[in-house]
Image (cartoon, rainbow, N blue to C red; front, side, top):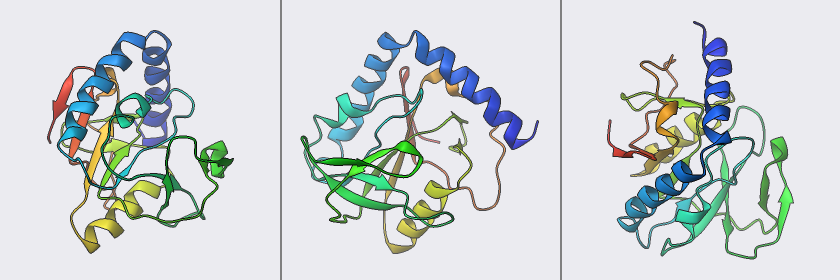
Length: 181
């Protein structure tokens, strides 16, 4: 199966999990909050969920440290990150994703990363733009960073098709727990 076919199948799987996933979502957020407690004080990037992405905001609400959101500035570039706080003024960014209007940039130390599918090696299947791969490569070249995939356990697949530019996740948090590849 090609990466494009795998992506289409993964969309369907995630949509089905999302449709009846309120309880699983709550469990996943409990696990994520547990993990984030180990990163208190660190600059945390999370995402505003779109489509059927698992929503990390319940866990992020308990994070003790600066928060930021990713911003797509242009195709084929790493993401930038804007500072965020509860009640922050938001505007629509690329792909219809809401981003902070305040353009104050912050460099995250920990990133919660959305995905369509993942495998036990720590690879993720995203939407195909390569934004997180370029971003993680850039951040890791500058120093330590922790990338946490956040998904329903049912999004796991035996083997995510990869390319040389794909970056591994450091941890994956699901409704069934936390694992490190």
